[in-house]
Image (cartoon, rainbow, N blue to C red; front, top):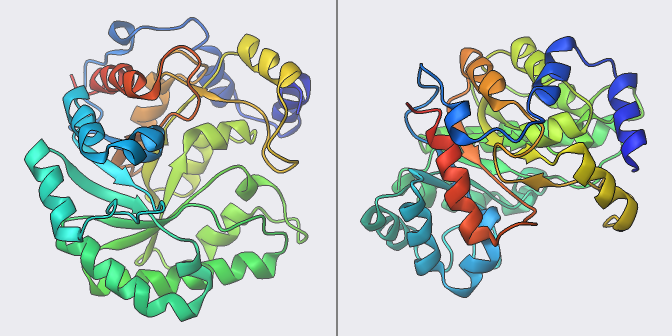
Length: 317
């Protein structure tokens, strides 16, 4: 998708003035001192380990130490080849984190736990293991390229089922968006609305990936206000400036037709004005603020997380 098409999509979807402001106000590469707020937005913040997945695969212990040294308070894991505990038993992984001064608050896990009931016993064990080390959320990160309302209704049904299992273990389940949830299905409805309206709020929460909401031409503030307190976690992920987006979209090839071109960048160096957005998120029930970055043009991931942590710290003072 070319830049002109992306910007045209934003206009066509009728974003509010608040979202346009959130995008435009951040075009001047604000530094961390400029983003500091007089009132703390959160007391602690986390890192989605997907940001440093290659480093973790090479040396998980050294990489987790680097996360702690950067200043993150907790991590959000994901279900890679070694599982959400990175090849360790749950208690062993929990001790590693504790010894480093880290906690684990959440993890993405296999979407099959939501859609394939034959995995229920496996999910029950995962929920028990997760709860045993203080993890609060098991999250569906992406259900696939679904097309119909019936498919999305099955996801909602599965999330409710997962929610019951998690509740029995003293934790919760949640759903993480990309852009597909904001593309109308054949019924004309947005999948994100289908999921929110057909899941039990006592069982299922949502994780807002702020980058993807904006990349899809949606207003994160409106979603936060409309569904107050359903979004409990967020990915704080910045969107590259337009000049860089144009370069990418003119010179790079998409990963298939499904994923739009674009990219995230070091926090505070892109288009999203988190100084405006994060306080509004907290006012509307957000509890967990998790940094994530997926593209690294100026420095390697292990260095980028240091800069991202500095940016996140500016919201704690």
